[in-house]
Image 1 (cartoon, one colour):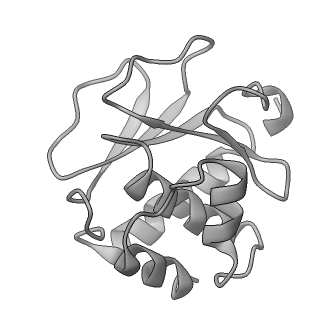
Image 2 (cartoon, rainbow, N blue to C red):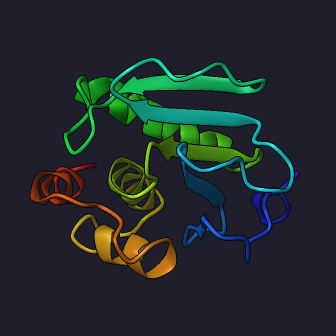
Length: 144
Protein backbone atom coordinates (compact mmCIF):
# COMPACT_ATOMS: atom_id res chain seq x y z
CA UNK A 1 0.00 0.00 0.00
CA UNK A 2 1.36 3.43 -0.82
CA UNK A 3 1.10 6.53 1.32
CA UNK A 4 -1.17 8.17 -1.26
CA UNK A 5 -3.96 5.69 -0.45
CA UNK A 6 -3.43 5.32 3.31
CA UNK A 7 -5.33 8.48 4.34
CA UNK A 8 -7.72 10.71 2.49
CA UNK A 9 -5.36 13.58 1.64
CA UNK A 10 -8.26 16.05 1.72
CA UNK A 11 -9.37 15.06 5.24
CA UNK A 12 -8.90 17.56 8.04
CA UNK A 13 -5.67 17.05 9.92
CA UNK A 14 -3.90 15.06 7.20
CA UNK A 15 -0.52 16.54 6.28
CA UNK A 16 1.00 15.69 2.92
CA UNK A 17 4.78 15.78 3.13
CA UNK A 18 6.75 16.81 0.02
CA UNK A 19 7.49 13.15 -0.75
CA UNK A 20 3.75 12.42 -0.85
CA UNK A 21 3.70 10.60 2.50
CA UNK A 22 0.57 11.32 4.51
CA UNK A 23 0.44 11.71 8.29
CA UNK A 24 -2.62 12.57 10.34
CA UNK A 25 -2.27 15.01 13.19
CA UNK A 26 -5.01 15.35 15.75
CA UNK A 27 -5.99 16.42 19.23
CA UNK A 28 -6.91 13.65 21.63
CA UNK A 29 -9.45 15.92 23.33
CA UNK A 30 -11.62 15.61 20.22
CA UNK A 31 -13.39 12.45 19.05
CA UNK A 32 -11.61 10.05 16.74
CA UNK A 33 -12.15 11.30 13.17
CA UNK A 34 -14.30 9.25 10.81
CA UNK A 35 -12.61 6.87 8.42
CA UNK A 36 -10.13 4.06 8.82
CA UNK A 37 -8.16 3.85 12.05
CA UNK A 38 -4.42 4.38 12.06
CA UNK A 39 -2.06 1.45 11.83
CA UNK A 40 0.32 3.22 14.19
CA UNK A 41 0.09 6.22 16.51
CA UNK A 42 2.67 8.34 18.29
CA UNK A 43 1.19 10.06 21.33
CA UNK A 44 2.91 13.15 22.67
CA UNK A 45 1.76 13.61 26.25
CA UNK A 46 3.13 14.28 29.72
CA UNK A 47 1.29 11.18 30.99
CA UNK A 48 0.68 7.72 29.58
CA UNK A 49 -2.12 7.86 26.97
CA UNK A 50 -5.19 5.63 27.06
CA UNK A 51 -4.81 2.28 25.33
CA UNK A 52 -5.71 2.12 21.64
CA UNK A 53 -6.45 -0.97 19.50
CA UNK A 54 -3.57 -0.25 17.07
CA UNK A 55 0.19 -0.25 17.50
CA UNK A 56 1.37 2.85 19.31
CA UNK A 57 4.22 4.56 21.05
CA UNK A 58 4.19 7.14 23.83
CA UNK A 59 6.67 9.99 23.91
CA UNK A 60 6.76 11.81 27.26
CA UNK A 61 6.23 15.44 26.32
CA UNK A 62 4.59 17.90 28.76
CA UNK A 63 2.17 20.46 27.33
CA UNK A 64 3.82 23.65 25.98
CA UNK A 65 7.28 22.13 26.54
CA UNK A 66 9.77 19.97 24.66
CA UNK A 67 10.17 16.18 24.69
CA UNK A 68 11.71 14.93 27.93
CA UNK A 69 14.20 12.76 26.00
CA UNK A 70 15.26 14.40 22.73
CA UNK A 71 17.12 11.33 21.45
CA UNK A 72 14.00 9.23 22.00
CA UNK A 73 11.96 11.90 20.22
CA UNK A 74 14.25 11.81 17.19
CA UNK A 75 14.00 8.00 17.07
CA UNK A 76 10.20 8.15 17.38
CA UNK A 77 9.94 10.73 14.58
CA UNK A 78 12.12 8.58 12.33
CA UNK A 79 9.90 5.56 13.07
CA UNK A 80 6.78 7.55 12.18
CA UNK A 81 8.40 8.86 8.99
CA UNK A 82 9.45 5.34 7.93
CA UNK A 83 6.05 3.82 8.73
CA UNK A 84 4.24 6.60 6.87
CA UNK A 85 5.59 5.22 3.60
CA UNK A 86 3.19 2.27 3.84
CA UNK A 87 0.90 2.67 6.88
CA UNK A 88 -1.74 5.03 8.19
CA UNK A 89 0.16 6.91 10.90
CA UNK A 90 -1.07 9.57 13.27
CA UNK A 91 0.60 11.96 15.67
CA UNK A 92 -1.47 13.34 18.52
CA UNK A 93 -1.26 15.43 21.66
CA UNK A 94 -4.11 16.88 23.73
CA UNK A 95 -4.96 19.81 21.46
CA UNK A 96 -3.30 18.75 18.21
CA UNK A 97 -1.37 21.98 17.60
CA UNK A 98 1.74 22.61 19.69
CA UNK A 99 3.38 19.24 20.29
CA UNK A 100 1.71 17.65 17.27
CA UNK A 101 2.68 20.57 15.03
CA UNK A 102 6.26 20.46 16.33
CA UNK A 103 6.50 16.72 15.62
CA UNK A 104 4.99 17.20 12.15
CA UNK A 105 7.54 19.92 11.44
CA UNK A 106 10.32 17.51 12.44
CA UNK A 107 8.83 14.95 10.03
CA UNK A 108 8.91 17.62 7.32
CA UNK A 109 12.63 18.08 8.03
CA UNK A 110 13.17 14.32 7.71
CA UNK A 111 11.26 14.52 4.42
CA UNK A 112 13.59 17.19 3.02
CA UNK A 113 12.08 20.52 4.08
CA UNK A 114 14.85 22.81 5.39
CA UNK A 115 14.61 23.07 9.18
CA UNK A 116 14.32 26.86 8.92
CA UNK A 117 11.19 26.46 6.74
CA UNK A 118 9.51 23.46 8.41
CA UNK A 119 7.29 25.42 10.83
CA UNK A 120 5.95 27.57 7.98
CA UNK A 121 5.35 24.42 5.91
CA UNK A 122 3.30 22.80 8.68
CA UNK A 123 1.38 26.00 9.36
CA UNK A 124 0.49 26.27 5.68
CA UNK A 125 -0.43 22.62 5.13
CA UNK A 126 -1.69 21.41 8.53
CA UNK A 127 -2.83 24.18 10.92
CA UNK A 128 -2.02 27.87 10.98
CA UNK A 129 -1.43 27.78 14.76
CA UNK A 130 0.82 24.71 14.75
CA UNK A 131 4.01 24.92 16.84
CA UNK A 132 2.95 27.17 19.69
CA UNK A 133 6.03 28.28 21.60
CA UNK A 134 9.39 29.90 20.79
CA UNK A 135 11.24 26.88 22.21
CA UNK A 136 9.20 24.52 20.03
CA UNK A 137 10.17 26.63 16.99
CA UNK A 138 13.86 26.50 18.05
CA UNK A 139 13.59 22.74 18.56
CA UNK A 140 12.46 22.34 14.93
CA UNK A 141 15.07 24.78 13.61
CA UNK A 142 17.81 22.70 15.27
CA UNK A 143 16.34 19.30 14.35
CA UNK A 144 18.28 17.14 11.89
